[in-house]
Length: 421
Image 1 (spheres, rainbow, N blue to C red):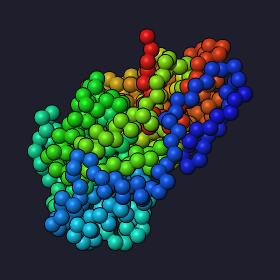
Image 2 (cartoon, rainbow, N blue to C red):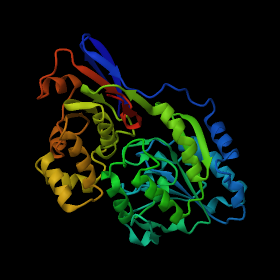
Image 3 (cartoon, rainbow, N blue to C red):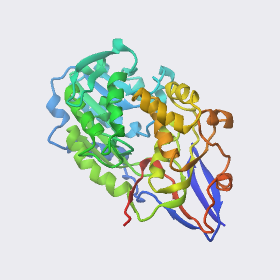
């Protein structure tokens, strides 16, 4: 038997497969971290892309910095100290530099959770607040995009003289890539804005790895113009969540510089589809809940044959991550009903997660290994199992004697590019 290990929560999941099986591991390139993480950030700040540096904003009296919430592995401990020093250096006092946790439509983080994403020394020096997409009193309207998205954004961010975003550039299942203005234009947007933008995920070009022609992503770029995001600081991470490269400057120029690096790291040519696909989103926080872990399933399904067995190893220590998704899917009896009702009701954030899972689960057989109780997982229309071996033995479709198997240990961040005749 061959032994394999994939990330699972804050630990790993071990399993064995027969020696005779043809197993392919589909993984990002193995690249080491920058030797000094903060030094890499300082280099990026001193050589901004698009000729937009922080020095140009000298004279600003206030700044707002959009930072990601606990569902994103953003290395704030390396990114924030050099950035905040640079903002102070242009004359903005610490008490006028507000960090806003950009939750999008995720549940707002209570203050006692802020240390999960913000280093304590920064919490003690700067104001930190959390966005709430459902609180209309927090929002201000800034117009409408050419695709009809109403631009509702966090008032505190809009009122700042200098508007900054901090995040990662990485593959995204329907935005093509995260990073740039997205941390603010989705992370600090109202529910109406997120809902209309994310409805574009059903369009053909709203897909993994597509940027230039992606309607959802280009709508986000237009939202960034409405919001006037001034400056971006983005990290590009390896599979160990360490900074390989940092990029700063004009948000669009940051994306133009960062995407080729991300493609080089995470795009993997794949020359066939597989009978069994075993995927991990990449461990914590990529598998913190079903809402995040679903992305790993979507990426794994890209290389799964019709009727294949897909096994998703995702701890989901915080359950679903969305009460709206949870209640909606629990009222449905099958994946077919999910697809039918979603089409009938029209796009809504929350139910869209059930649609994404059902869309792929209608073509392949999905098994889930998680920390959720089997009863709860079944209420979400998932097939829970305890082990990889149990999933394989439970598969309804007869497997070939020596099946083709793919393992994606970092599925959320992997772009499997299928190249077949």
